[in-house]
Image 1 (cartoon, rainbow, N blue to C red):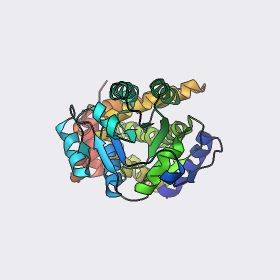
Image 2 (tube, rainbow, N blue to C red; image 1 turned 90 degrees about the vertical axis):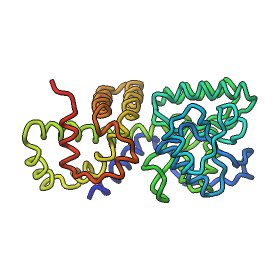
Image 3 (spheres, rainbow, N blue to C red; image 1 turned 180 degrees about the vertical axis):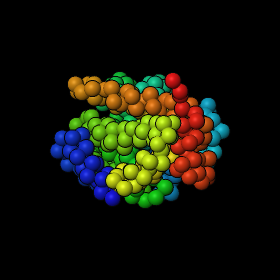
Length: 329
């Protein structure tokens, strides 16, 4: 079964990523720490950010965002999620106890710099949590940016779909302020602490996303190629016969992927940087970045996640549309 495949792979990558660190769901009571959580600011409340904000708002927190220059779609998602618009980043850092950065991975450092400038301007230093799928090295840079303005920093990574269904999304946290961040366990999210050492939360996301999104990139290339080479039906029959779990994994994941592909380009490059930093080849993930760049430029890639969820395409139709729009030599 695909669930067993995913479970076994996840356990292996977890061991690699955290190096044996304890993984625990540790609810932290506000009175046990110096920080009391009342208001959370969300950087970029898109599909994931708005769902995280909605979960927190439903469990009693005030959730805010700075939407002064955001798109109509982002504004609509925030309003639907119960996220209040405070206009500017200065207002956001002044009012928030915690700022969660959930955005396009390759924008994470620039976003942190903008928030740090807003903190200096506003004279406020809330806890800043980078929740993006970025390289260990990139997270270290963000930590330094926050340290320079005197703001506490927590490293986090989100695994799973947007938290619209309870207990289907895990957030891993590490670093000296992970315990403060884990107060979110009391407000509808599942936070697993990997200890005070920096780098662990990004490491587990790197290893996990390599398995899931890396595999999706391989399936995209294989299935589009099979369609283009005239053996798609034969391949599907063979996979149904000999690799049923992998085929289900592909069918469950691929049709949800194109609207996210533009974000995954930067993510794959960030994962590649992590591997290069520990002496392993970055080329597999760099190739996945190329694949997602091509997908992002297709008709399917230009759809929003909301539009994609409303449509009921067959898997064959989905692959045919990708094959039609993907580059040709």
